[in-house]
Length: 335
Image (tube, rainbow, N blue to C red; front, side, top):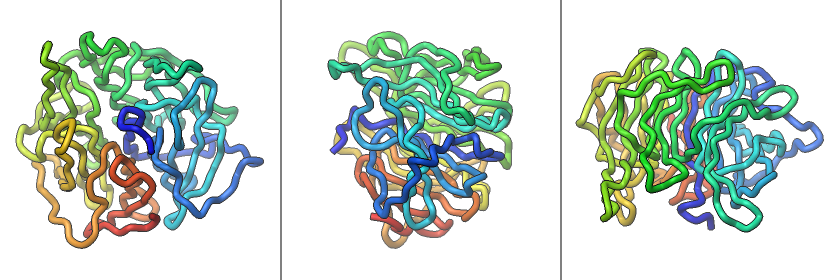
């Protein structure tokens, strides 16, 4: 079983206008499996060309030189697309760059041959020839990345020097370089979640965990909501879901709302199983009936545009199952 500290931040990413270059395929390695891939350092996305939800990553602890596997979801099972993904890591961030039609993977942690962990600050881009290293950031993990309609936006995270100040900057990837675009906005945090509301053309940020407050290592589990309008942040709400981190968020294009699911409200014994929607002005809890995925820590949650459903995979609490939300209820698809 993957340990808590080894699980990757699973960011749900809504993709659009993808091309076959978005995920390079090694035809010799294509194959199909009847079993869902195991929880691990996976990153979720939607590839519009394939018309499928895609996962990057797989089981185990990522070591130097290893490459991730790319999987695609058919609606009934997971297929292997290629084993030649980006250089593997955990607790990274990823998003699809609509303008450049490529996937970007940033930061995270890797293991060296001696099994020690290193927080990294490299960025990788997908292309027809494979994955290419393009830019560096200040090393961090547990950060957030999203396409806000103007390009890729990165916020927050936890630095390699865990006792040092946590980053609260907002940066944009421009001509393969990261540039700060805002220093005001949400306070520093890790394990937050972002979703791009394409109907209202704004990024929604909710929650996360604050840096330790001092020697007693007290941390706050945040319940604030912030909006990025393409130029600046504004706080939109303090009321809504209970403060949490390691939750999942995605924009449901059919319903026109941001969905939030699960997460944790403390380091131990405070798992959450609730679900909420943000309509651009306020949060409303969704009353769940029937079976649900239950508690999930850092699951993948991606909106499947072709099928009009939200796909949820894995996370601590349910390591190998796949669920779908049809707008009314959850359904278990693959155990």
